[in-house]
Amino acid sequence: MRIKSEIWVKALLRRAAVAGSPGVIVRRGDADAGAIFVIITRLDGTADLYGPAPAGLSPADGDRLLQSMKQRASDADVAAVIEREQRIDGDLWVVEIESRDGAHYLDGWLLDP
Image (cartoon, rainbow, N blue to C red; front, side, top):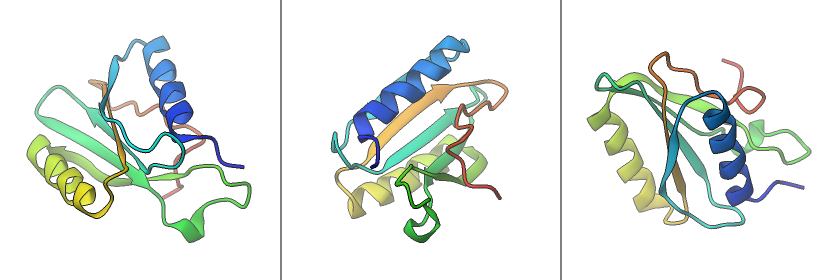
């Protein structure tokens, strides 16, 4: 059984906050099953973007997996990807976390490259 999106997002934000990286919900999606996109802003005009891994690569137990979509991209590039995804899926979540060193706090939830 998959954890609801809202609970997953809150857990990620808590994990980041405990490590000293503030985060916010930029866009609230469907509380139960909305896709989640995570922006790691490096505070230097660049950001990393993580989004849902393809459905066929998710584990059988229903846990969420994310994959890297952009690394050290400009904030404008990341915003363009999010805007495009919002047109496709109006129920998505966007979470932004500040991390100068690029720490993503997605350990265990990130698809291996």
